[in-house]
Amino acid sequence: MNSKAFQVARWEFVEKVKTKAFIISLLMLPVIIGVFAVLPGILASKADNQTRNIGIIDQTGSLASLIAARLNEKYKLPDGRPNYKLVQITDDDTSLEHLKKLATAKILGNEIEGYFILPIDVMSKGNVEYRSENVGNIRDQERFSSAIEDVVVEKRLIASGFDAQKIKALTTKVDIKTIKISSKGEEKESGFLETFFSGYIFIMMLMFLVITSGQMLIRSVVEEKSNRIVEVLLSSCSPMELMTGKVFGLALLGLTTVSFWILILIGVNFATSTHFLSVDHLALLIVFFVLGYLLYAAIFVAVGAPLNTEQEAQQMTSYISLLLVFPIALAVPVMQDPNSLLAKILTLIPIFTPTFMALRLAIQLPAWWEIVLSLIILSGSIVFMMWAAAKIFRIGILLTGKRPSVKEIVRWITTNA
Image (cartoon, rainbow, N blue to C red; front, top):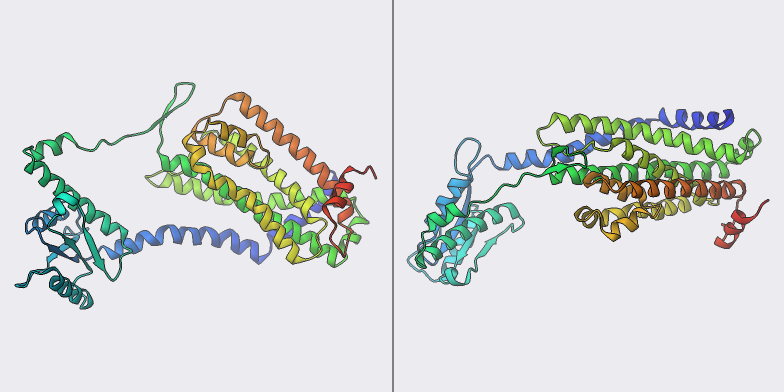
């Protein structure tokens, strides 16, 4: 950058960085994310501070006590008390409809939270019913489902002449520990959570940077056009210098925010026992991050220069941001098979290169030729897009009134004037 472009970049950065909105977003968003990450755990722990009463209508007459014992064995409160108390719904009238009425009355009277119905044929058909005012507590339902299934299977084995205890011992669950190895033979313990979030966080960071700085870039251009300030600016510098200064000034602003948040993430990552972030191939990730931003910045400049109103700017920002949502939809398939033909093709499409390469780098380092080719394609696309954006910006920055058509914009790019 020459001195004039540098002055524009410095002015854009300084003017935006000292605003209250920037400072609040810098500090408050990590706090909000932290609250949303921690609060559910706190509320869940608060909810588990007392024994919960769950009813059961056991038409078999033999499973309720076994299920209660299995629950008491597996689930306890922090103070050692049982997590659940199984309340058997019984009466002299053993008809199912009558027992349902009794159980429903207990729910309405807050004596129990809900109740399970074990029909007489549960051993053969395996159908169980749960009734409650709140059927959204999936965790408790899964726990009871697991306990009921264990008891029913054990009963079936015994009825078939098998030793249920021996089979239980022989079918103990296997705990798999994943170890990531590299071409150099290095080994490192790595779980799915760490691998997934490394790529996912990269996408979210790039999305935030593109949306915020891109939106500020478009709004800045629209505001200066509507206030006629741009004419004063262009009397002191060229359109190319103005565009370059705006892009790099807002890029520095966005990178400042993202760097601050990355430091927080790394600190939290190593301060907790469960790591959710991998720093493998960090240099390559940074390169793709910066190149990805420059490509999208050029797209924002090209799209924003001909706009005249805030409404148009907001619409265009939303449309461009959708390009960054697409990789999220395909994140899981790409992570399951990072060397598939689909993953390789998407990696070589410039607007998707940064995000999909980040996902692949987090799982398995692609072949060197793929990395080099993707960098060449991405860099070439940035050069072309910056050149096209400069052409559009040079004419569109002074254009007011009717928005130009796509045909006119193409003519701006192809003309030598």
